[in-house]
Image 1 (cartoon, rainbow, N blue to C red):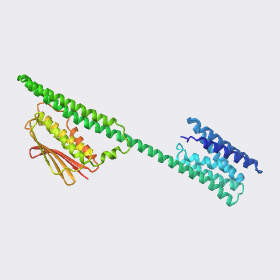
Image 2 (cartoon, rainbow, N blue to C red; image 1 turned 180 degrees about the vertical axis):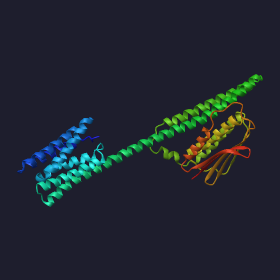
Image 3 (cartoon, rainbow, N blue to C red; image 1 turned 30 degrees about the vertical axis):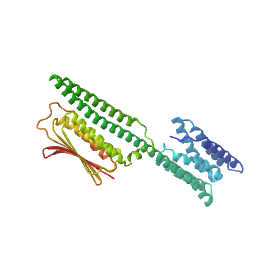
Image 4 (cartoon, helix red, strand yellow; image 1 turned 90 degrees about the horizontal axis):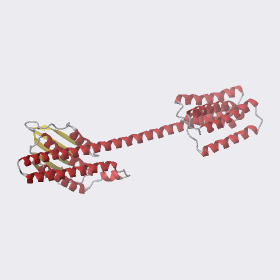
Length: 385
């Protein structure tokens, strides 16, 4: 697309054209040279006027006008000097800088202008110094055009990279929301199924008070899950401010304390849902960022949800171990002798979400999951600063 000139550029073009016109008539010139020089000036002005019109046909006509200015000015320069080479040099610059013109065509145009100057010097003898000056004028215009062309291409690449980075950030945000919602729904809905099944069994046994407590626990679990889902959506919708991500990545000693409380809540919830769990902690907590704390919290949440889905009734052993430079969370449960009576949802998303969270951490870490000596073991290890 032809670049849109500014008002200053248009005014400068008019001033330059007036100055060139005065120079042409300030001294006697051969008629053929005067005609060609005036044609170069006219083509220059037409090209400047046409680029204000945002239509493809006008852009094509402007390119033809620029080409005419280069040719006429280059030939007339042997007899009129700089007066006709100014339009030729400027039009060479804008034509070479035009992104709609191929690089090959731009190079041919620049070489063609130099060739016309040389041809004019042969037809109408010109001094070597004057010829060198005229060739230099056309080449400087063409080189300036190539410089502008490269600058425009660099700006376009930067814009494309910025757009791609924005799209990647949005995709990462959607993936993070999907992981959080998956974990929240798996934890909440799985717990609700357990509580409601227990309440139904208690009602059938005539224990209404215990059934009422189960329903109350189910209500609390649903409210907690709804709150977590709302927080996840709000975090995605919240506009990003400069420096917010850097602040979130700072190491915070309080995050370790908050992590312990959140993990204790998950353990208590698992027990309230009828699960059996041995919860062990060792080592001295170290500062970690919120992303690391959230990855550990979601890992325990998903692991306990998987136990309730795939191995109901199995005792769980969960350990959180702090070591120099490393924190390790492991969840272990015996493999069930038979599959659960109700089919579960498609497997794999929870463990994949664990790995994605840990892979996204700045310092890295590992996630392993699989059977070991008759048990299913999930291990999350994060590297600390």
